[in-house]
Length: 241
Image 1 (cartoon, one colour):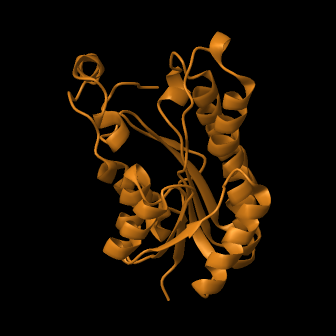
Image 2 (cartoon, helix red, strand yellow):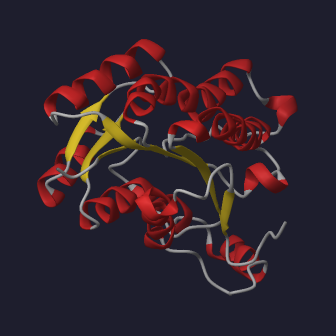
């Protein structure tokens, strides 16, 4: 039977590309989403991929969501892609505490809640792949994004620590740090601002969601078993460590 993969925030943007790529690679894919029921229904209709709605910033909702996916797809989740994220941008001196809390809860805490919900089954099976989608802005910081940058930076530490804890059980944990990717949100940036952005990317273009998705498929494969605790940057050379 094909392995079951779950992608959070998996019906739009990078998440949708990841979900489709995993399906095309032979996985039985489920996607989570939090808003836009219309988009989720259309995604399921077009792709045939199962969609499930719950709040990934709620630990009990994550536990129940994983249970529902496992029951409906008749198996345990072996590949988890923690992709979902939000932004609530402003300079820190203007940022209300609730905007800090919301971004950290959705972008970072959810990685713990979702991983916690699947880790026991992965340990029992002695196989698992956890792939956390971070951001280049967690590596270099970004004006107006202290909340987002902090949450995305926290993913790197979470990834390394969990990788050490789970390596002996056949579970790998890795992160991907995309740069500017041609999603609906990025493509809506004003033309003059986009010119500045592109001037800072050595390859001279935005990345494509499918380029991130191919990296996820690679890290999810059985053959990637010797790669864990790593961060793969996909940013066209804009930031190099």
